[in-house]
Length: 112
Image 1 (cartoon, one colour):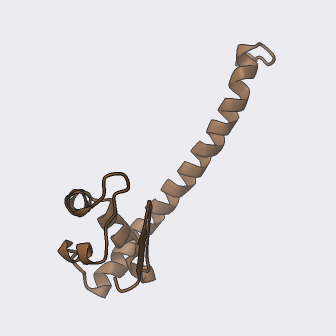
Image 2 (tube, helix red, strand yellow; image 1 turned 135 degrees about the vertical axis):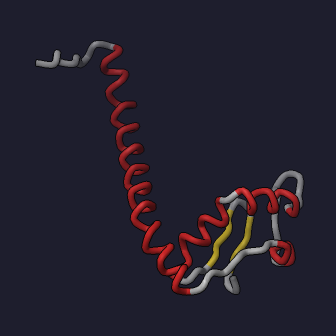
């Protein structure tokens, strides 16, 4: 992690393409979240700085393992991403149709 940006409600890390999902899983994991909560500073806007990062331990697997991990999980992350997009679109459709159904401006045909 030699390239990074940290700011209020924002963090950017530059990862090698084969380590993206590995790093993402690490950052979403309980170890990182718990450790982060111990080192953040600030009452109104919590922050973490470059020196604080020194307390985090991250295992760096062999490139072969990173490649396998990336190949295995990337398909699931794509499915998750697509499902999130579809849920967003379905929520928009529901929010549009529900008032129309409640006000009886549209009806649902009985199933045949």
